[in-house]
Length: 292
Image 1 (tube, rainbow, N blue to C red):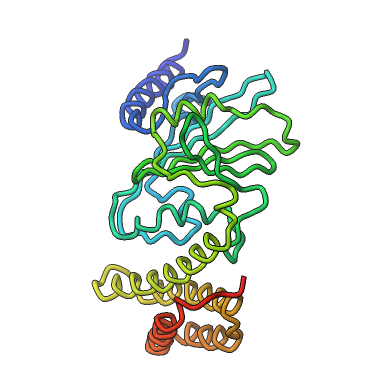
Image 2: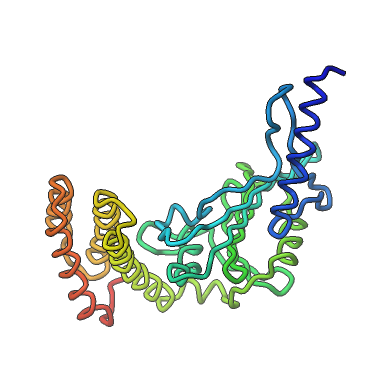
């Protein structure tokens, strides 16, 4: 055995112990039934190992929802190999949030990934009870399970384009034991009710204006560049306008063009003025009925 290969094996062992010790609170670092834990592999002598459990400084699946970055989220991820038995190979992701102001929207943001761009629950999305615990599930080209465990977001996902493989229920159950769901029970009928849709849509409009205020506060505190604040604020204001047009029948095209012009000219005053206008409109109209 060459010295380089011995060095690679030593690096792999050190890496494995160090990483496993750091993320054991979040990931299950053993095989689960027929599902084999992906472990670090040293493919090239002298190079760090690849694969196995990973740790990231980011918001996990909530990054796509414009989750506000007012704290340091930690995301832990690992795959379990299904082997040659026809089982899928699910990936587990657990994100620890800090319980700060932006985490008031955690459930809304977890739910968002299973809805259309205008807030309607997708056809393949519904709640499910597993061992007496509530999980949000989406099935299509595979399955995805999501739930909250306090301020932790748990996601288990696998690909199965033909929907022929058995679901990795052993993995889901094991993680429900490690991170019990804190979601309240809800039925599919309740999820698809007019009341649920209305509440979610109005919450998204509220959240978008809240996001603008949060970004401008970061600018006031000197923590971010003005260009980023203007871009993020206009993005959320455009979403707000799209929802207002769809559900309150207020035309959005001219307003969106105006905001685009302000952004192109770096007109922060114009953007702030429009934000104040939208907030006043929302206060006057958010309790009104919407057109679903």
